[in-house]
Image (cartoon, rainbow, N blue to C red; front, side, top):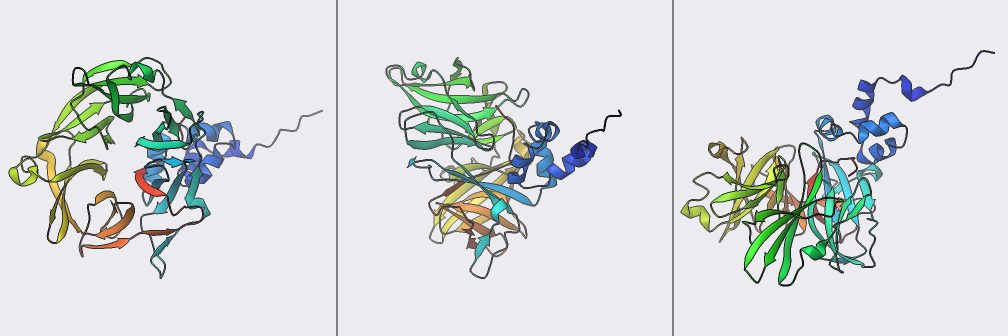
Length: 363
């Protein structure tokens, strides 16, 4: 008796077409597609998929919100995927559908109910609990890893000043960088650990006294210094100095507040000052990474409060954050429009704190 061949509809779709389809669907749909079959799963979790999806969805971006920026009971994250057009209704609200938002409650193995967001890298967050534990959570895969052997960093007269997450650009290995102050000898050191490992490796003296707000690009985290930018490469495990334009370190810029961020896939430096008319931020962009002469003053933001750019939007506008609120800043008119979200499930107490490219990999 002749066997009837079992019909497998998904196996009939060429791999190239599958990539095109999966690369264009929303994040929530991608998460569901991982469960369809092995081929779809391997496409979605592959290292190449995030950059391919970014190319397919150039008009979209993803915002990360949390209720735990300053400590909260019952930590919740919201991932909101939106169009760069950000069309508003008559009331100025930006509307998102049910596929626009993903609510994540990290499953953390600890009795503590209070958590603080220490740092974030591309949808992976490092949390400190009320019990002084550190956890690294991949929001899209649901994984949560306990940072091991913290007692080695908390010896007598030692205190942790901050931490940074990063990923080796060659191996894809996630790592945790810790900044420690030895109060007895008054020295600052840095230690690094491969995520999931137990060993802490010394990477020498830390050149930073206030390692907050690192900006990740090209396998490195970056921080502002007085005359240059400090970077730490997670592959080489070394601190390096990146030169800045002479005009940035001139007398007129020395007293300005500075902030690093990524815009158009380039490292940017915002130099802000306060005057009678409010805050002014000159935004410099490094067109060629690591090259001093490639710094160009790109544009100026004039606002009532300290502002940090997040993303270049459509029609010459920039998505910026001021305090706990988001605005659309028009570079031509210098007018800011507050961004109000009317999306089911997005709590009013949620704070926007990052834009990122979704990655569906596992540690």
